[in-house]
Image (tube, rainbow over all chains, first blue to last red):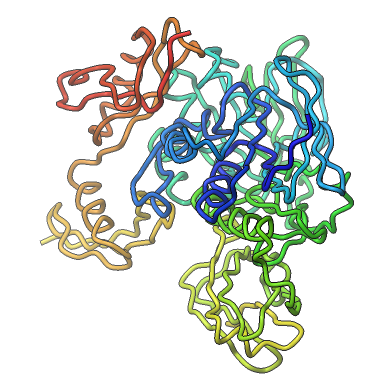
Length: 419
Length: 123
């Protein structure tokens, strides 16, 4: 079966769903979403807590609630086809997508454009090399979340959580609500990488201690975890001898970072960014390979799904326009360079038509700072300047550049912080 | 009169505004640093009667999954959250369920319903 799709979307999480809806709104006539799980919605289906959707749907929703909204938008549209329980094995540079499912066997789909929305996965114990025994009871926080919220199992009863990212904090509360005892949350950095609201409502509410600048130096247990040895770390994140103490537990949950899932992108030999671990994209979310777009956590890990949807809608729109031959081919490229305290910025480049085009930049800072000025500059000309009362690595900063300002740009712009 | 100021982070949305709250004799008289009115309301509630949303799961029979995610239709007293969560651990419903269906009416007599946060078709 060789059918030509306007847009093939790899991954049916929030990014894939939002991209599909936007592609449909922008005139694409033949769209397909390929999802490997048994249902659409991606990781949202296991994030049963609330706090989603305030920007995008102007309403506070749970994760499944947000997924439901996205699914409702694409449902019953003859132009949008959905394949679940289908794994994409390979994507070729000529926009052929090879997938397999128990129901349909091996599939080969041809697209005019492809949008990559595979999301991200968790770093594991192996990725951070925690020494000690190899007992059962060590899980990534997301795996435990799926067990507790969807599958109906408890991973353990007495919990230590390593890493204070949002998933770790949310799981600290979740395990407490299920009657478990969360002994402590340990964070190697001198600051938490989670949202402040989650420190308040997930840790403080349940009197769970957060040890900053601490890490696990040994996991104990034969067969099953019996405890961990924890040590304070110095400013280089090295354990300080003599500061060790033990915590008894039967389970260790790891919330130690997310990595964009880019096996397919690497297979396509897309230009990748070393810090975001995702493909380099322009403001349309087009990658280095024409016709291939990427959006959501596969490009850079977001803290809010609302921004994932926003980014995916952009990708969906421009993929749809390209499929219909409506995309301006005559564009110049402007490089975006993060400097002075800004660690990463997406998009990494802008593709500008004559007269410019409105663009939104999403940034992360390297370290927490107070009262700083964010400046977008072309040479010495300040294009956009904004005062930030607080800037934290855990909270993505978004800034919009009006079309008339983009017209003033040279071949590169910088985004940086100024005291 | 006892006047006290407290630094408090709003939890109403992911912005997490840092607010300076002035309290006089147990009542909030001033809130600074909030971006929207919800922040001021949160600060007042937090000082007098803290409230939280509750999200958890209940068992479900006959659906795609063994668990159904649920959410409180409104905020509950913070001190009652663990008790409500414990109550929900023993609740089981039957598929099909639609988003928004009431799973537990008036939980523990607190005047708040617990509703389904996703659809679960019967299989």
